[in-house]
Image (cartoon, rainbow, N blue to C red; front, side, top):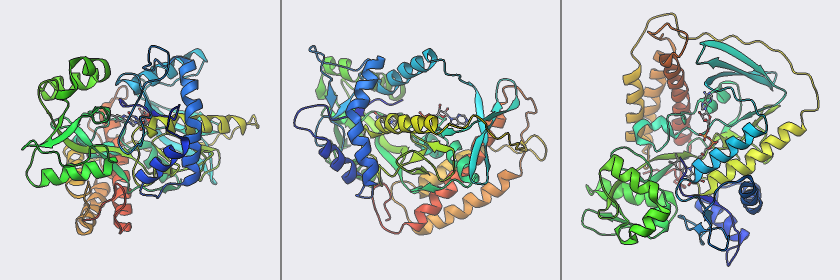
Length: 452
Ligand SMILES: Cc1cc2nc3c(=O)[nH]c(=O)nc-3n(C[C@H](O)[C@H](O)[C@H](O)COP(=O)(O)OP(=O)(O)OC[C@H]3O[C@@H](n4cnc5c(N)ncnc54)[C@H](O)[C@@H]3O)c2cc1C
């Protein structure tokens, strides 16, 4: 879904030092300096590697990379493929992995990790298609299961996959987590659907205006600042819009084609002629599975990379364009370290059994899932009030206790979507509890965590 781009200093007045400073400053100066250094120093060779693999980056006629400015960056630094950057990266890497003979177990849902005496020996999956458990033993395991901002349900820009399963399962197995209180809100999600309108629109000169047509914030500040300003306008009863009407049809067609399509399709607004109605929505989880700069977790033979991992490099607020970069830089580090430390040819065949919720009292849990997202958005979003957080925590814990007991109606094994929905909801409750607990512990306002 990533649209805007992937950061790297390639030339000109920009420098790696400035990329480091922007990342550190956007994160409320809380970021891990070593992780930030590794990220920014590896960025140019990462882009060169992706280019060699065939990612169709947007380029000038002379072959130089086009780069756009995103919020919180001193210079245009994000390389892109129109506004389909994530899709193009994913397709190219998927092709490359298929070509390299990687084995994919599609439609397998992670149920649990095989952890014993502080070491991981593989994982237990549910084969959705057949409806059967599958154990995969491994000498090393890399978790790359994405973030958890979708716990906000319809108030999130994320797809349903970003439910936090992997973070919840890691936590249940004693893997250390960190910075769980930091969920970033993106200021420009479509008002009705929460579908993202990329920061590249503001980078190109898009303005944020209220119902009176007034601009109310410097649009290219980091996301936490712009989201709070947008939220404050909405709290005052204003409607908020992203105005790109002045950019012109040719520019939009070349650089922001997807944004226009999304606004037309989901908001029934043509951005060439009218401002786009927007609202802030939960977008990115800075925290997650705590890793060192070798992508190693607190458990032996277990690595993590991408949005599910917390190297500490985003601090309290992520800079646009740094997430795609992080998952490639630290994904490669995780892969290399996992491969290089695989010297022993044996693995331990440990068995783990799990009770799936087929038996017992059934309950329609779907309204509960909706209720969780509503409560999170009301009481634990852009501005957090400790009293409301405490009430919310009690409510999540009571929901979690109740949901732990329930069974599903559909007893079929193959393609049982109700089973997956319930398992995901349980994981979402675990992650929501951890998010609110951590938010209660952090008393000061910093980055995406604002106490008011
Ligand atoms: C709309 C949008 C726009 C964005 N734009 C940008 C951008 O321009 N630049 C940028 O740097 N970042 C951007 N981001 C952030 C960035 O795209 C994400 O952080 C990044 O894609 C996360 O990649 P990942 O590989 O860590 O996780 P994901 O891409 O989320 O992949 C996780 C995978 O794990 C799988 N999974 C989850 N649970 C289970 C389970 N229980 N069992 C089995 N598999 C499971 C999922 O199906 C998925 O395939 C954007 C994000 C969004 C939502």
